[in-house]
Amino acid sequence: MNDFDLIGLHRLARAATDAGYYNAAKLFNGAAASLINHQLSAEALPKTDEDFVAAIAAIEPTLAALNLDRNLLESLLHIRSAITKNRMLAYADVPPVFVCRVCGHIARNQAPDYCPDCGAGQLTFQSFAATYYLEPEPIEVLINQLTLTPDWLDRILAALPAERLAQKIGGAQGEWSLIEAASHQLDAQQLIAERVEQFMHSETPNLSAKSPAEMVDQSGLSAPQIAQAFRQSRTHMIDQLQAAPSNYWTRVGQHNEFGPVTLQQQVSYFAKHEQWHMAQMTRIRKSLT
Ligand SMILES: [Zn+2]
Image (cartoon, rainbow, N blue to C red; front, side, top):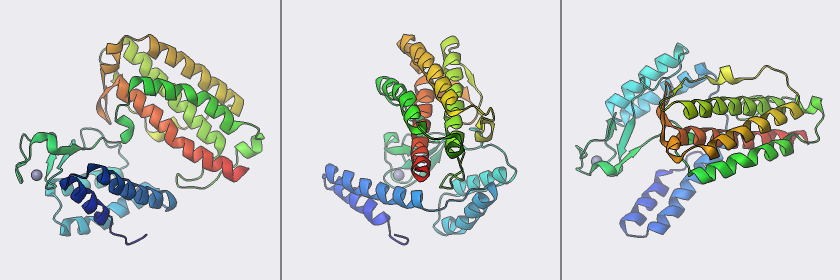
């Protein structure tokens, strides 16, 4: 669907909303999201910093020709140069962005009381989390989902000999073996366990960011050892979360990449991160069996 105009679907969604057919808008928005995700999951995305920087540079003239907000274009230049220098993009590098749902006006740092272009009120502005992982999910849902993962991990690693588990399979995320992906899940679990611990002991924990590279596990554990360590850490963490007073969930830590993050957001982040990787591990397992 290379040149298909997705704005057409968004146009119908907005027309449906304007006409009061709110439930029709769900279908058009769903169709647009499905087509985008389907295509992006199948194509090769820029992988290296070099490729990514080149891809940003390639799209900048088009965005400028479309008269995109100048501040936003300048921010793109700024992040492109930061990535060229191999720097992590800190929260301070990229202020929050708000877009007017009526007219597309872009505001930074905070949404204005009234849109300077169209007059719409502040609540009309759309904000963008750095990743949907940070959008907070209900606590009960989080606990339920987190509880399921140790069994899932046992199943995905079951009945494969060590050489199959170590076999690297290429894919959208690059070349990974099942054991490397499982190690990544364990690293992430150990990191969230550490963060939960911090939230239990401090009202304002300092959540220092770790780059994905720092999270690659080199410890050489076997699959059963990884699954066992994951289960142990997860079970202890869930016990802690269930025993925590409800106001702990709204404690706010400081994260140098994401800024202020509540316990609920932090737990949502890791629950969604591990579920995203489930697709990768499912795909690897399928190509091994
Ligand atoms: Zn506006």
